[in-house]
Image (cartoon, rainbow over all chains, first blue to last red; front, side):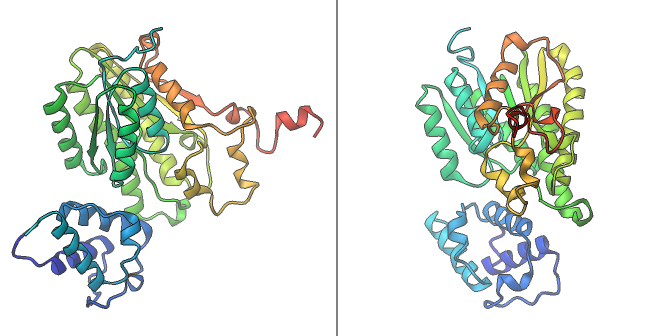
Length: 85
Length: 264
């Protein structure tokens, strides 16, 4: 992942690329239900997040994450657990 | 036959941590093979499969890789080559798919399914063949959805048909190199994955899961045939698919020979 790009921007890029919804206006309160992502979208987003941030995302943990803001916090926490800068 | 016919062999099982793949992993390990377990996302499941295999006294290695991504396949084989230097057995078991009818399938679902179930088989076979200079065995796992129409199974069924055709081409091309390539076509196997396709079906629609034997096909039934196809006894079987379905595909829908013989 590029160091110059924030975690939030990287997540947005991944979600937009997978869901192919360029018109979605993201904010921390954007609920994932509003993206109308199907189950394949969600798998592809998780795979991309795991690859990009070099983390593991257990299904039971990610089920608790409801919106963009919570996802950013979750990803930063997982990166921290790995000792990333 | 020896209890450890695969002692010292190195086997890669894609999707080897769950369901049918896990049974194959454990069967090969029980017969002496050192196993490399490829998994998609669930590390805890892969580690438990690895521990179960290690208890059989073999070397076990796990590799996370989404085999729908060619770069990840490359990385996986580069890691195998660096660590083991060769491969003796490849089981292309990993599969995915989207449960939709033909008219509801979109490009994304089609590509996802074909990339994992068909293209990955080609890419893994290409890399594996280079690690089999003294010969080897490749077994590809298919399903009866390749030749029969099953509810919501369009994408997977078509991808499995491609896998079966690819198996025949690989079998002929690799035969002079001492590499045998065969496959298994299973009917509904009692795994977690099956629930994805059957949760919305009526009991009548689920009839194809039953078999004249009186039980469903279990993952271990598939693993038993994999070990046979990987044995020297099967060396003159090339490019073939062994149907493991308890006889299900031989009888028409609605006919239950066990029940009917009993006057039911």
